[in-house]
Length: 587
Image (cartoon, rainbow, N blue to C red; front, side):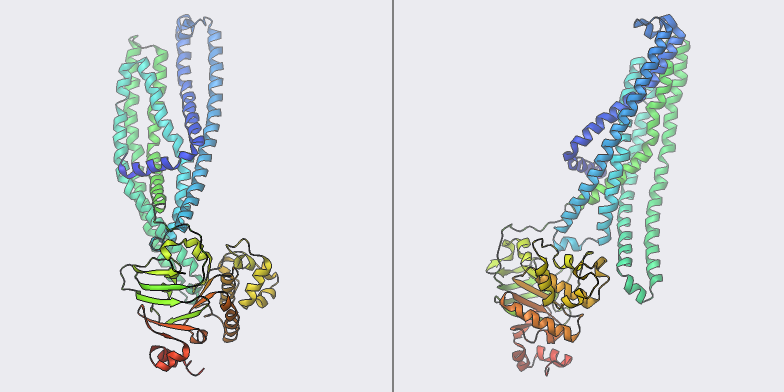
C-alpha cells in the first residue's frame, strides 16, 4: 500500500476508534461468516469420501460406521452451517451499515463544525462547491466503503488465510503451486493502486469544481435570467462536466483492466489443482474426497481476488475522500482565550496595518479612537478600506501589525465569541435563513422573547410591514428570504442586529436598499440607541452620517481627515468634494 493511501487510511482508522463497539463485532461476524462460507466445500469433500470409501471413510474413522448415519450427520452439519452463515451475514451487515452511517454523520458534523470555526483567511481559500462536495459526496463515499467494501476486504484476507491452512494440511505440494498467483496478484494490485491514486484524487477535485459551478449557477439565478445568459452558464457547466467525465473515464479504463488480468492469474492456480491434483489422486497419493475439496477450494481461494479490481477502486475513492475531509479538519482554527468580557463600547486602533494575500495594504498604519456611546461614521470611495475595517473589528482577520483595543483590552486577548455576541452587525450582503421572520430576528439568541422581537422590529421600521403579512411574525420567508424585497430584508437584518441590545452596533451600508422616507425613520430610531451603545456607520449615502459625532474619511487604507460634518465641510478637502459630488453640502 502506497504512502498516498496508507496515511489517510491510518488517519481514518484513528478517527473511527470511538466506534469500536461497532467495528470490532463487525470484523468478528465477517470472519465467522467466511468460516461458515468455506465449510460446504469441505463437507462436500467429506461426502465424496464417504461414498467412495464407505466403511473406511473419514467419518467411519470417527465412529460413524453406518453410511446413512454419515449422510444424516453431514446434512445436519450443512443445515447448521448455512444457518450460521446467514445469521453472521445479517449481523455483520447491520454492524457495518451502522458503522458507515455513524462515521458519515460524525465526519459531516465534525467537518462542518471545524469549517465554521476556521479563520477567515483559511475559509476564503476554499471554494464553496468544494466544501459542499466534501461534506456530502465524500462522506457518502466513506459510508459506502464501510457498508459495501470493508467486508469484501475481510473476505479476501480471511478466506485466503483459512483456505491456505486447509491446502497445506491436505497437500503441501499443491498448496505451494496454488499460492504462486497470489504474489503476482498482489503486485498487480500495488501497480494499479499506484496508477489509480492520483486519478481518483483528480476526480474528487474536479467534482468539487463542478459543484462550485453548479452552486454559482443556482445562486446567480436572477442575474443570469436578467442578462439572458442561460446559454453562457450552460456552456460553462458543460465544460466542467466534460472535464469531470473525462477524469472518471481515465480511471474507469485503467480500473477495467484489473479483473481480466487477475482472472488469468486465477486460472493458473485452478489448472495446477485440476491437473496436478488429479495425477496425485490417480496415483493414490491423494484421497478423492480431498481432491474434490481442493478443486472447489481453489476457486474459493482465488476467485475473491477477481473482485479486487472493484475493491481497489472503491478503496481509492474512499481514501481520496478521506484525505479531502481530513484536510478540512486541519484548517487553521480561530484561537483566542475563552475569557468572558463585558464591552463598554470603547474602541481603539493603534497603528493597524493589514492586507489580503498578493495585494497592497488595504489598511495602512491606521489609528483612531471611538468613545463609548459615540456615533462614528467611516466614508470613502470604493476600495478605501471600509469593509476591511469592519472585518478587523469583528476579529475575522488579524492585523499584520498594530493593535486593536476594546475597553483597553487587545483583541488577541479576548474571546472572539464573547466579543461578537456584544456586537450587532448589519453587513452589505444581507443573509436571511430559511424560516419565519421571528426566527430570523431572534436567530442565535434563545433568550429573546416575542416582545423583544417586536420592539427591535419597530426600531428597524419593520413592524408595520410584518403585521400586514397574513401570518405576521410567523411568516415563512423562504430560502435566503426570497419572498421579501431588498428593503424588507435590510430592515429584518437591522432588527436582528439590535434585538439582543449590543454594546456596539455596526451598520455597513445598512440602509442602501431603503427609500429616503424609511431611511430617515430608521435613522431617527437608531438615534434612540445612542444612550445604550456605540454606533459605527459605514455609508456611501452621506445623508446617513451627517449627524454622526465623528466622521473619518478613508482613502487607500488611510484616514485622510476626521471631524463632524460641518467641520469637514469647512476644511473644503476630501469630504467636501464627496459632498459636492453627491449634492449633500446644502442639504
